[in-house]
Length: 341
Image 1 (tube, one colour):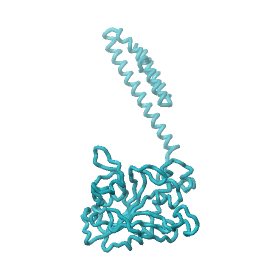
Image 2 (cartoon, one colour):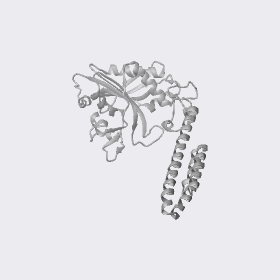
Image 3 (cartoon, helix red, strand yellow):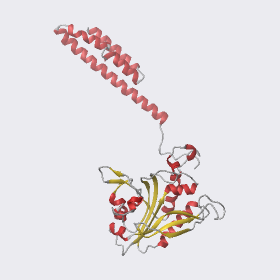
Image 4 (cartoon, helix red, strand yellow):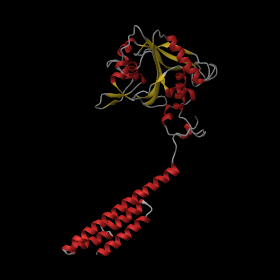
């Protein structure tokens, strides 16, 4: 019995060295120490030995089993190390390598427009704050002069998070109170982010879309500052002089509030144009001077400081810039659509 065990040990240890893959090791281990393995079958005979032989053979068989199992584990580690080294040699990708200039790589149109907008405002000294996708009822509504009884809440049909009292942000304005309280005055903030509303989806409406918002708070801020900022952004974006006009509009978090239109960059106002419909103007976004109540909610004295804010749907701006007819294209994995940009 001793000779048989020692002979099996030598054969197995030698065989283990020649195994090349993890599956080979596992299969061979089962063949040796599995339920019906070679070593297991030998050990079944121990019960028929005398007491003296059991003590000797029992200790020897246990030592041999431990040595064999350790050899299997060691070989598995060696094989895994070899596989990792092979992958590093053949599949390693250096993430610090500069981006390829391959023309087959395309930015998503929303990303492309956002980068252009951010570049403009970085040059104007704005700080960029990414909007929170999950926020509180206070930040999303109450801090923006929209109490629970305000009809504007119905306009922004909201996704509430069960048991938490939080909401999916319906607007990037939900960051205003947070930024006002955390930053030193004066403030020049650009706030891009994804927002959510319970909309019926069609060619111009989505329940998930992107917004960008600007907020400036300083002394002696007026609508003239607001108008200059918007005009500079649009002229940079379209690569030509763009005119804007302000129309009275109501938004609970600004006073006065205005609707902003800009001159159509696709036509001369005479030839047929599907973008502006011959009006020469494109309806664009909301804007206005920040409401005193909003400043007060952020512990800012409206008697000393004033500010402006404006924002728009980034999807809509990309649709205008690239003449995209359907907002649903942005979230559709259609490569032929994305490769146009």
